[in-house]
Amino acid sequence: MFFGGDPFEGMGGMGGMGGRSRKAADTTGLYKTLGVAKSAQPDEIKKAYRKLAREAHPDKGGDEATFKKIQEAFDVLGNEEKRTIYDEYGMEGLENGGGGGGPTDLFDMLSGRGGRRGQSSRTKKGEPIVHPLKMTLENIMNGTTRKLKITRKVIDREKGVKKCATCKGQGVVIRTVRMGPMIQQMQSACDQCGGKGVSFDEKKLAETLEVHTPKGAPDGHKVKFSEKADEIPDGDAGDVVFVLQEQPHPDFKRKGDDLYIERSISLSEALCGFAMELTHLDGRKLLIKSKPGDVIKPVNYDPFRDEEGKQDWDMFEDSDIPSVDDAAAADSEDLNICKKACASGQLKGRGIGAFVQKNGKTKFKQCTTEEAMKAKKRSPGSKLFILRDPMASAGKRMMKAVEGGGLPRLKQPFEHGNLFIILTIEFPATIDPSVCAELLKVLPPAKSVPKITADMADVEEEFLTDVDPVASFKIAQATNPEEDDDDDERGGGGGGGGVQCAQQ
Image (cartoon, rainbow, N blue to C red; front, side, top):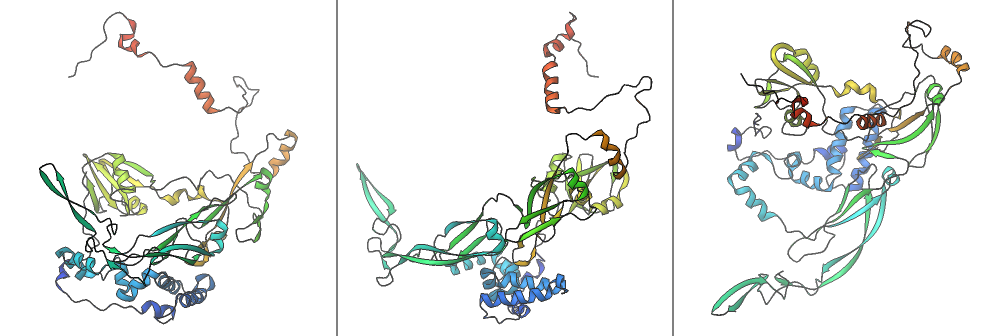
């Protein structure tokens, strides 16, 4: 299957690559946004960010655009690697993956010069050491700082690094092996230096690292200490990386910045209101209540069901949207392939809101669900598939929550996710018929009101009971075995041969 589209889309114009000059990068703008000097220490940057974020936060009456600029500035300057790139190349360097970026670098890469230049300037680095760091949800809610001891190998600088006399610094030696009348030369690692080409003495060094885990850090969050791993003689020491491992909590579950807890309530609480107490992850005592007059309804939505890549499509026979331009095309009408291409394949993230199939071909349209519905026209023989608006079923997903009661957002500690309460309503097994009349006075009227009564002729009265549908289906399978295929092959046992159909 072939999908259309420009493979160089997003790389920018190619016509201006002849120019070799590049405008000097702005490496001070973000510092001005936070009101700090370019030489400011990380603590100064954090302090300035927190102060400005409080003042400019929309919930505090601040300007949303200003708050966004402050956040973007801290996202760069608060990150050691991003700040280093920004100080040298500006925002253009960050957008181009850490290099100088721009057409000049692309030209060098295509001509073969860029790769060699990058390799010659890149310093060799030792292997990183990765440590798991177990964290509870309480730790993630509050943020933690731990002092952890590490032991690493460092080179004895007093004795220095010397070139291996055996291999002359090559790391390999040539050995001559006689095999009968033949003499063969074989290359192998130098035994004297272990293939390193140099000889040196190492000693162990114990250090204490202060590992700070920010509030709201996700599972897998990494805290890196540059050049704190074992030293190597011909380059920089490796990094020590701590990887956060979120531990399960007995009461809370996490999804992004949102928290979930499960509680059971009675039918009377669902109808007349309920209250519950909760000790939050930061130690606060919460009294959570439903609003007066609010009715708790059962919710079937499972927030932890894996729905990544899932898309629902509505099909319209004899329809097309000719006014919407084609974004891509496929020489196939395989529905599964087309849906997969939109959800997780080549067309993912390209805003495909509809596709049309006709005469063995599929045309994909870049549009919203609303735009597709408005552009829908009759077209005999065409099948139109429109992506179902995921918000159309939002009403069925609504759950009771304490807004802002979740985890702090990473790098935005003054904003929080929500605390959802998954409520299971326990219905009574039976109700005293004598109180039903009183209940009906306060409950909504019945939706189904039959026009027949049990005392009418030809009316049979039945009462509902509890039956397991799975058990019922299994009983049907056991009592109704499939017919023997041999009977069909014998033509139903009529004695004559089976009927043969001739193609016209």
